Image (tube, rainbow, N blue to C red; front, side, top):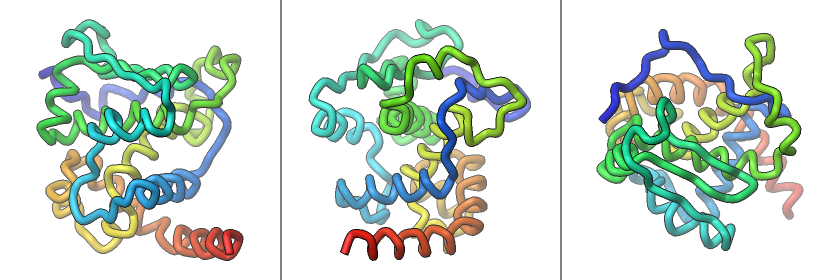
Length: 201
């Protein structure tokens, strides 16, 4: 398995995309959880979700497992408009075995497919520069949604990062970031859920 990158190696902002907030992504992840009957009692089955649920949502959805290292410096890649995900074999195997970084990588690619499916191609041609706010960049959005999918806000808001890491099979850094953000966002999340329920009734 390749060495896991650290924060000091820099942040790939990806491409400029339409803006969204962390709350938008938390609400979307919660809707996904509800749709598949996931209650947060155990780790979210992200590999099974990619293999079995995505094809039910998108009949043309597919994924390809390629030789380790064949994507060069990429840990995975997604073509949202084509509903296609490509993963190196070492990442896929590690994710299936419950390794945190690999599970986040799969969730990140799934997040691109779900959230960026209808992003116009013209937007994807402009690489996101450092002057853009994070919420307008494809990589921040995919990371935030991946974290919300793997670590349900309703559960982790009352947990410490060590518990989250062990229960949801994520890396220590991902658990730390997500629990911190969950505590800051939970009240807004509950209020927004209440509004959504009123609109639906």
